[in-house]
Image (cartoon, rainbow, N blue to C red; front, side, top):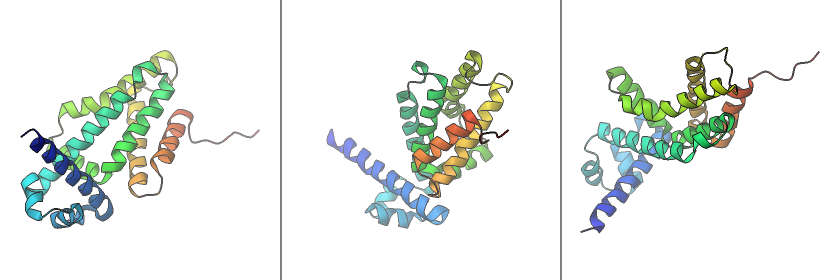
Length: 194
């Protein structure tokens, strides 16, 4: 009996991973049949685990949040300087988000429109970023003349755009992370010439 839940979890995780890949490749036009075929399961099996497309997207959103939570916790932000924390957070967001980029855009846009994005999700993801930026402003490693909430918005906008570059395969996760960190911390300007 103990093996059955573990098997169910593995099958569910496999379906979610496959769905993330199929959606990344084919976009919103990917059907449940496409996902089942690529996952190597019957449509009946897919629907037994995820009775609707919305249920599948919700499962993917939960898997993405769980993955991101683990990565943020593993970044150990409280024990590193702010600049290193920004780099670690950026890699965490892009590594987790790169896997689920197609779904993140679809699901979060839908939930925001319906006002269904749970506050706990915002705190789980945005909270560590806000606290790190506030710490940086307080200790002088980030600019004090730009309010922390504005820096938060600018940082998250850079990460969101970098996710599009990763999902569009224009940049890899490491390249995109390095670009976000460089632009956020050091600006986009080149060396000034006299």
